[in-house]
Image (cartoon, rainbow, N blue to C red; front, top):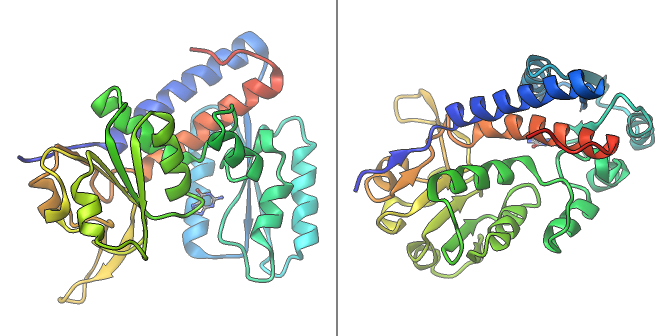
Length: 293
Ligand code: GUN
C-alpha cells in the first residue's frame, strides 16, 4: 500500500476561509469583531516567528490582533497583571501566552490566571477538566486540528484502535481524550512503555507527539493505518545540511499506511487555523451569540 498524503496546508487554508466567513457574518449581523491577544515574553527567535504568524493570520481573517511584548526579566506578578488586564478587556475574546516562559516564571500559575472562557489554547485546568468530562470548554488547538483531519479522512472513528505516542498536556493527553470522546479504543504510549512497537502495530490510528526524530519506525505501522505526525524536529544530516523530520519515519511508514501527514505541511499549519477558529467560538460564547454555520 502507498499512503495518501494528508495535505495540512490545504486543510488549514479551508479552515481559515471558514473562519473569515464567520467573522464577516459576526461583523455584519452582530457588530462583533473577534479579538485575539498574544503575549510574548522575551526574544526567543522561534517564538517570535510563531507570534508574527499568529498576528498575520488573525488580521487576514478579519479579526483584531493585539500583541503584547514583555521583557524576559518581567516578574510573574507583572505578567499575571497583564493577563488580568486582558481578561477584563471586552475587545479581547482570546488570550494566548506564548510558551515556553522564562524559568523564573511558573507557567501553570500564568495559565491558570487566564479566564477559562478566553483560554483559546485550552490549557487551563478548567478546560482540560471539561474535555475530560465531556463538557463544553476550549479545546487545545493542535489535537483539535488532528481530530478534524482524522474525521475528514476516516469519517466515523468509533471503535477504532488509536495509539497516541506522547503524554504532554499540550498534545498527547488532550489528543487521547478527544479520541476517547470519538469512541476510539485509546492507548497512550510514552518513554516507559514496554514493547512500544507492538502497541503501535495494532493501531488503526497512530498520533505521534513525542518530539523524538523518527522514533516511530515505518515497519511498526499496520497496513492501511492512518498516521498523524505532530513532531517537528530539525536534524543535521551526514552532509551537514539540516532537515525537518517528524516523529515518524516518513518514507517507510508511507509504504504501509493508508494515509499519513507529511512534515512539514501536515499538522503544523492546522494549529494556527484552529486557534483562529477557537477565537471565533470564544467570541460567540462571550457575546451569547450562536456561532454562524
Ligand atoms: N508554544 C509552542 N506551541 C504553543 C501553543 O500551541 N500555545 C502556546 N501558548 N505556546 C506555544
